[in-house]
Length: 350
Image 1 (cartoon, helix red, strand yellow):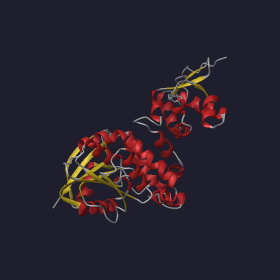
Image 2 (cartoon, rainbow, N blue to C red):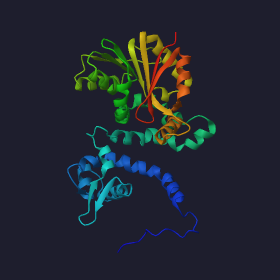
Image 3 (cartoon, helix red, strand yellow):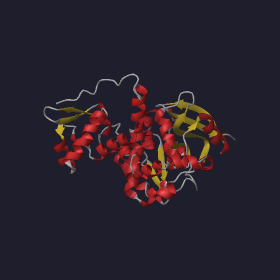
Image 4 (cartoon, one colour):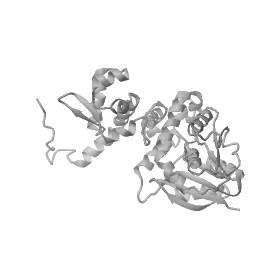
């Protein structure tokens, strides 16, 4: 027995039309995020890489409940992530599912788990209250700010770091092409997590050496990543705090850093960067850039995450120029890369 649900509602019925459906799906989008997060946690993409499987087979491999696994997979079909053959009851992966595969060069598996996880989900639930009072509820929800929380919860920190590496993959390609660096120069990746950006820069340009500066719980991952890529002799992982000082360098990289902080904190970071910059050196800020006339959905929604989870924000180009100027730096070049990202190059304004 089948049900025909393809007929449109009568034209005079309240809520008829595409606008209603779109708004309803936007409202329910939170549940879709949890479907993707759950599929990532169950490694559905990895299990289906060799071919179609039933829900029971996937549940067995993932140590999960078969009935609930089936329901999640069925939702995945509705979302266009999976396909389903009713004759043999097997699921197979659609093209989007490849982005949740562990070994994919463009994987978003860890980002799906981290971004829709409890660290961000709790503060997100209080977004209306955040907007009303002009300050988020992170401390009330987590007991501290996000970065302190990661320092206290290393497994969550590991997942978040891996998620940010996932997110950066398409950005890094364009950023490396846009970064100006000469043989013999020292590159400092400020808050560089596992050093994915500077490692790729060093891989493509053998005449450079690099340093990753990050918090003590992050540094071991950077050293491990460099060793795995055969760059252990050219890259140093240094524990530190970019609010206190930045190691000296000819090229300083700031990827996904400034958007986490308010203006005063950004100027403090950039002032430390300027103090560390060797004569003739360059700073490269890699961030989403907001464009009010044609806003990017990715940038706009990331800005909402900044709103409820950090003191930062996604900014427009003049705002970045203002922060740099306040720290004694001036914009020398802007290179748009993977939309909505850009590499904003700056030099000492003195």
